[in-house]
Amino acid sequence: MGPGKGATATDLERAYELGQRIAQQGWVLLTGGRNAGVMDAASQGAKAAGGLTVGILPSSDTQNMSDAVDIAIATDMGSGRNNINVLSSDVVIACGIGAGTASEIALALKGGKPVVLLSDHHESQQFFTSLSPETVFVAATPVDAIDIVQAIVQENR
Amino acid sequence: MGPGKGATATDLERAYELGQRIAQQGWVLLTGGRNAGVMDAASQGAKAAGGLTVGILPSSDTQNMSDAVDIAIATDMGSGRNNINVLSSDVVIACGIGAGTASEIALALKGGKPVVLLSDHHESQQFFTSLSPETVFVAATPVDAIDIVQAIVQENR
Amino acid sequence: MGPGKGATATDLERAYELGQRIAQQGWVLLTGGRNAGVMDAASQGAKAAGGLTVGILPSSDTQNMSDAVDIAIATDMGSGRNNINVLSSDVVIACGIGAGTASEIALALKGGKPVVLLSDHHESQQFFTSLSPETVFVAATPVDAIDIVQAIVQENR
Amino acid sequence: MGPGKGATATDLERAYELGQRIAQQGWVLLTGGRNAGVMDAASQGAKAAGGLTVGILPSSDTQNMSDAVDIAIATDMGSGRNNINVLSSDVVIACGIGAGTASEIALALKGGKPVVLLSDHHESQQFFTSLSPETVFVAATPVDAIDIVQAIVQENR
Image 1: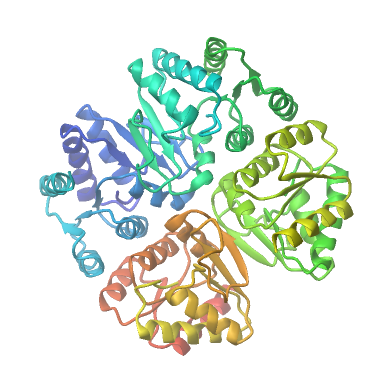
Image 2 (image 1 turned 180 degrees about the vertical axis):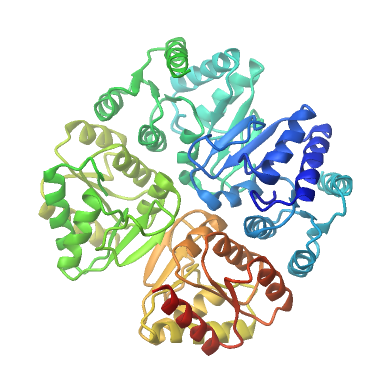
């Protein structure tokens, strides 16, 4: 998960690498599906590494979908689809921050899903760690994020 | 799409065959994802033929999911997820009838999606054909349904 | 519940009278909230009789809302809001027919809500009565519909 | 908006007073509708002052509803209903903090709604102010929150 148009150059670079590494792990990548920002970069990275990508779209059709999405779910629910994004994920990686991404992190914590924060935004680390210290993890790099997810997945097995 | 616990033996047999034939076409099968009735039978058929299956679940987790679902989408929306089922489909095949299936057929027509009815339930054929004569098709067998879908897909290309 | 742009003159007349009579009973009128068809006519009727009206809108704002709606609920869910319409109602009166209205009737039956059909559309009466003979009622006039709802409400008390 | 079971004694006291003052302004109070925490306290306060209360419930029925809710909207969407809560509000007052409340604040900002924070939780003030400095306001007391809302409402007129 991560910002659409508000994504920084660093967010996009990290998202592409995350997508690649998620695919290399044999994991399915699930994003918000649009052809913008972190969603698109992560999906492109995953496809470049031969992965499978799912996009949970805010719209009723696939008009603004990333062309790197394999399985398109059209919700016609706008930001209401954010709860579906997180409930359908085993672990949420938040790459960058913005209002939409913040809602996904919060909904993930509400739904009992572990969240890995990959962002240099200090206030978001402080806030979400204060909300749920046991299920929020802070990563410094994509490699770091993948290591944290692996540890979570192994523990939950 | 089709009934869960209300499915007849004929519905289940047809759903399994539909799943197989959908997979053989190289199409992705999307169902309501539960381990019951037409959803489960179609997913089992598709997996037996090596297909890819998506399940849009009414629940917040995968506890009552068909074990033949590959990609699980947890909506926590109950029957509210029926609109997502149809908006995410290119064509809807309704195998059997019940209140939930009727809502999916109606939402599909509202959303401009073609619907193929595969059921011996006379009243549903009459009703939905009267609602939308140009986008409702009646099939007598799974083979027939697949033929109709092929014609629709080719026309929309 | 009833069609927006597809409403007939008879549907609109009946909807207005239904709104009036619902308000006269002291009941709250809940509709799909838009400034079109049966939703608008029923809301206007209810306001003319001093009633309270709720509109569950498909949109994210109130731009296309009926000006006779008191309490606006903005869902941004398109037809996905139809399930909320019926779950929030004690009894559903379907005035006229169309794909959206058919989805509401079917979702109401799925959700265990009684439905009163007020429409001369023979196929819909036959279909929905065949689906759920015990919770579907056919009314000939608005007065008739109100009488049926009163009987249902008294029985459920 | 505010926590259910995680609400503090201060949150509940403030929520009750907020409900009273909202009703005294002649405004409609909209909450998440459950019989717990801030939702319940605010609704009780509003009813004590003769106000009108709307509850957007996460459930499909009214079993766990606050008895101070006048208009019940049953969504059957769990936390997915949080987006409806904020889209249906003119201004969001967040009284206390928790994961669910954080998701509502974030969704409100995403949806362009002004948010008033009434909480001593320092990290949430810092975070949300950093996300959207122009639409997040910090209040020290219920009276302060109402003053801020009045200013917003007058400006938007």
